[in-house]
Length: 156
Image 1 (tube, rainbow, N blue to C red):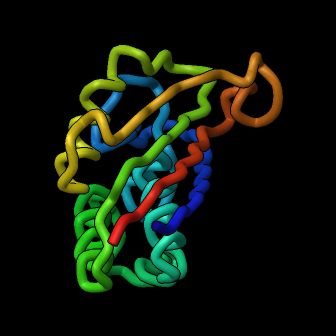
Image 2: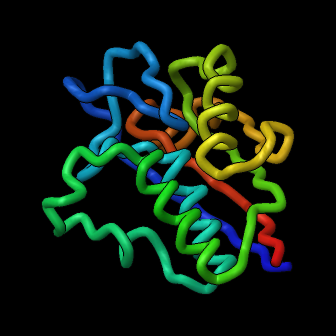
């Protein structure tokens, strides 16, 4: 077995969609990034790539490549899963945390889990997802951005 950790952060800005785990969440701001800036999916991809010893998402999907402008992160996750399969790995489980002061994410968590599980080819029970605030501390607590952590276990 192999273990990986991923982290991602993006700034919140007006006139962008807020996408987390492939779910569009109604909010007055969205995450700024080259792709759809889905911090949750990005953190999970980095955990998966790290566990497999395949680098990170910047190596595979550089923000200097116009091919990834506005990219759907779930499609990028599907590509990561193909890379893992080529190396003989499958996802055992993942534990993810999204850190955001606003909006409240609890109503959207089940749909995010379903999306991530479907793309990863696992049961929903193999993806654990939590959302928390920072009690108004730091950049996430001030509402300047959203970040996510992910830890995963890969099995042969």
